[in-house]
Image (cartoon, rainbow, N blue to C red; front, top):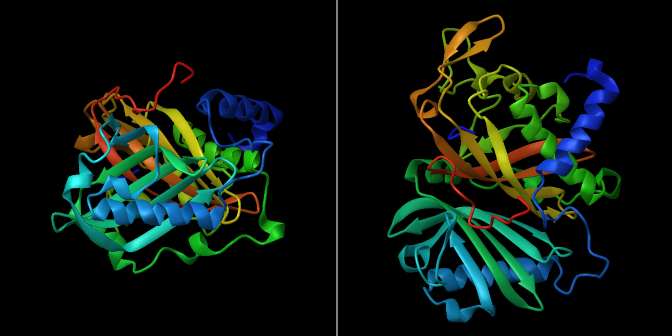
Length: 332
């Protein structure tokens, strides 16, 4: 989010949250498991993603099995398969993370790449039906410093690659509901309504903006340094009030094995907020980047462990205000 109500409200909030989940989740989301079993399991899906990445680097879409009418977008724009990054990628980087949903037939990847030698971050999603790729959605975050920040970490946080124990798992609908409370928490400036694990941190575009005591953040004012706070306290400060809406919210991959919920979400910023009224601090000026109309598409994923959000990660793509996702439907 760098491109970026409380328990006493009781039953009313619980009912409101349930309604907000139902009304904000885009049609066709991955929360409900189909009755039929998967035809391509976890290993099959991640294997197809590897084939996709190898074909991408080879600049050869003929190396992957695609449906006749495969849909492909890059940074929300529908394109012909073989265009855009297909022509400019020059190699893969060192940071890689996969998540897969056999029941929805979807697989995701976040990792660093090289584009004509320059570091960048790629987030890719494939939908697979009967062994063929029917949808390819990609976000490319073209910022070399952010890509280098991911690679400086070495490997993804271990929580992302640790399968859940049986006792830590929750139904996929509950996983999506838990992730959705995060966005409601942002819009209501309330970390108390979100089931954060005490150890939860957020890393977006390679930058950790929670529990980061050495960070120099957008909203720093004298001793007020929200990036050094825990995520619950950070969310409750009111600094995110410049975000007017988060819509559509498209939940696409529910990796029940790893406990990961992945989706693509549009953050909309009218640019009208000049300051945030922070309790105990006063008026905190909004950074210039938030004081102009814009939308930001976030590819974001959540580790859900024992009903708690354990970790958050993702990337952003800045867009003109009111931009469409490239996957919008009348139901959105």
